[in-house]
Image (spheres, each protein chain N blue to C red):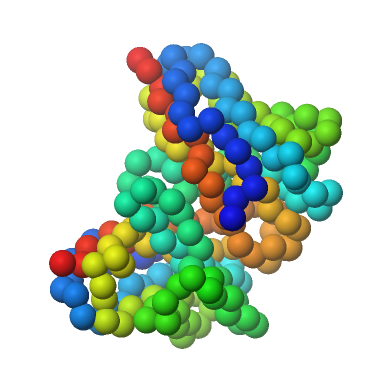
Length: 113
Length: 110
């Protein structure tokens, strides 16, 4: 069973559209994250979220919003997509207090045309 | 931003040990050294972490200098599947963010 799963794996869409990427983890972790990896391969944190707190990287445009229906899911909604949003988006999870690192999903490649 | 520095790239012959260095000269007493790797088109994968003692697991060994200002990740017998970008990250205890630098691109050569 995949520990952190993201859907879709690939997403091609036009500028101005609104889209969502889903993430689910079956590890029982209490914190989930979204990372963005751009064309230069830099991995940057966008959000971290648990049932207590949402932490937003201040560089993330407010067109991006995480939504968590429950502890096992953290979806990423993007409004008014722009060409610069093209990237690979990774979801991850971790357990507070655990020393064993984050578990990442396999990524969603978003292409805005 | 990442506070570690790593060489941008390294090569290693298949079957030999790969030694990947990392400088974290500004690490504080409550920060751990974590290593992750990212194989092409996959999500980052946790490898190992340590505070001040050397650590070993089924994937790798981590050697941390006594002053904790640098460390080396050792893959004892590199295989072609170990070709990846390796990230060294210092993480504060209880912190909930990983800040990735540019990493070291390791290429294992047949």
